[in-house]
Amino acid sequence: MDTPLRKDHDSPLRGVRANIVQSIRAHRVQDLQDAAAVLGHHFLYANLAHALTKQDVLDLIAQQFMFPAHFGKNFDALADCMTDPLHKSGPQPGFVVVLEQIPATAKFDKEAREQLLDVFRDAAEYWGDRKIAFRCFYSFL
Image (cartoon, rainbow, N blue to C red; front, side):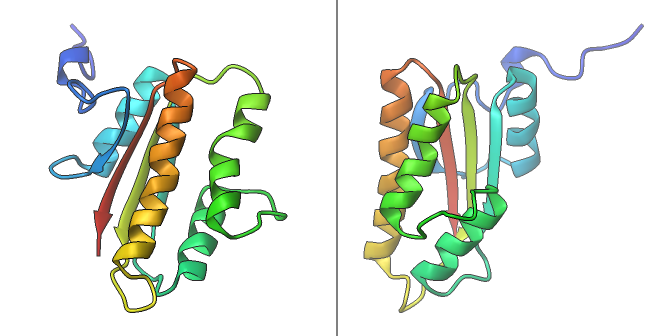
């Protein structure tokens, strides 16, 4: 007899609020990706380990999230890409976002990291207002 791959109560998203930005902690990226697939949610992943500056971070996110070529490469443009065009494209199933190894460098300091996370907090609130789950997990380098 076949056993199910994963029961809902085993999901790494169990107990994680639907609209939140939080440290990845003990979650594994593959488990989060699998959970997104089971739920039918978009899975967006960016590994930022090679970024040193704000521009590097934005370039890597744009590349790995497959943003359009006209992406403005600033935090306002990032906020727009995480909300407005997606909302205009029709109903959304939900989002699981992973920002792995956010840099901690002199050119991407604590203030820049908080600004980046604020973009995703605002996106979580935006989607929450529309009753769409948006969970973002991050880690620092």
